[in-house]
Length: 361
Image (cartoon, rainbow, N blue to C red; front, top):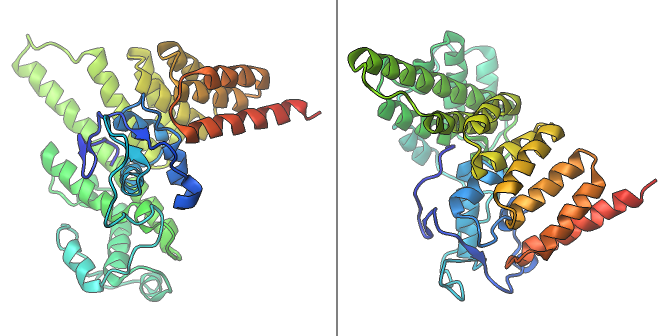
């Protein structure tokens, strides 16, 4: 999933701006690295949607983390002074879930259109079915089946829909399938050879979906133009939003350089804050500090009093080797109003590290 839903169960609308509960201690609560990272981005100024999009984490994983943080009393909704207690906390994101029975998994797989019989299995496939890994038989067969379908180079067959399926059917099938094989679903498990198989298959399915949706929109646009010549063309803002979604899909699918190209086109047409922040994070992850600095400067100009945007600019300067600039920006960020104790601690740590690097001969 690369699109943030309108609501999250147990939290509400993703347009809400959450705050970190005063006095919440991440160490005592035993939050994990990804949870701590996301917690540090919640400052009362950004909505849940913006936090998820700017985090660089897969949206599904980000939602799981926000839900978990809310359940352990780390986050406050607008108007709350104390987080409600939870009788059944959500397991920590990234921890190994209770084992699922093979029957339950097989029943869930019945929703998929793929034939998992694996007729005439190769010796390699037979070995994979028997190797030691924390996957049940249905999960193994699904991944091996998808590997076979990759060879046919038919994106419709790969996703599990008929030729010419409408956008709604295609989207439903893609989200169901990607949820089943998303690498984060099996975080912390022993996967053996299936770790590489799963990552490759997930990336190819994401690319197939992006190709089909782009082609579908192109066909719809051509048809609309032919039938209704007076129809207004797609606005730059609409096209930028489309490019942004495709860029996020590529980034999540493991193609940061491909995502960078689309982010660049997106911000040229519509330099929104959320586009610029996500482009900055992608550039940093892709090892492109010059681009990261360019995007971060523009984001900071749009939101000069936003602590998270300012810190992102400091990170870009630091990766680009501009340590004096990073120090100056971090000092500015620490002077801003900020109710997130975790973010304040991270700013202090960032500043200490930058000063250490400046003092190193």
